[in-house]
Image (cartoon, rainbow, N blue to C red):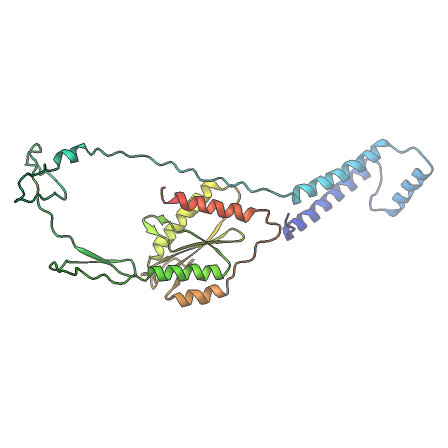
Length: 309
């Protein structure tokens, strides 16, 4: 049970309301002023001399005390949060592979010829579909990913013995540093997942139902769409608990023209490290009663199923 300022104010307001109601009741029915010391002395003298007193007077006092205590209990009673695990319905789609298998070329017994498999067969409007024709496969293009998640298609050169060179990818180094930064700040790092075709770079949770979500080389508009998808899942599966999501983007391509002020943008990993040094995760309170563990399990379930929605 957490003793908070709002609970103290509600209890004070409830006691005042019960006191005023009791004063009105005793003044109207018994002509007794609960705020008068002389009236209480008179009631005490009647009890000392065994003078008859109405039973309803004592019953009214007992009911008043019960109402006051019961109201305070309703305000301070521990509330168990109900967390419903998301149940995702995935439609199974079946594809008919029989036509594809029928269109495959048969094995050629002559070793002097080479069969070429078609990349895609698209019969024209004037061509008879009963006699499909096969075309050769054009050499593919080399797609080299850059750091800002944009793709630069280039025509593949003439085949060589060594093949085309691939630029080194530093995302693994950044992912490791991100996990280290948030772990040192006291947050619990969760596995990444694919959302809207984009894989997150970091998901971490903290106390008080907080969550951090970040991406590397992704536009802030796409980070906002990922956060909104998490928020929709939370709204559909949670009753009273509200989870706050803090989003950030590292090396965002639209950092200069971004319209989302709630998405943090960093140009280097050092900027993020310095920023998180001042935002430490508060420790789990002693009266947590296992709520953080339930919150952590709920986030694991959401991460597992959100990519399938």
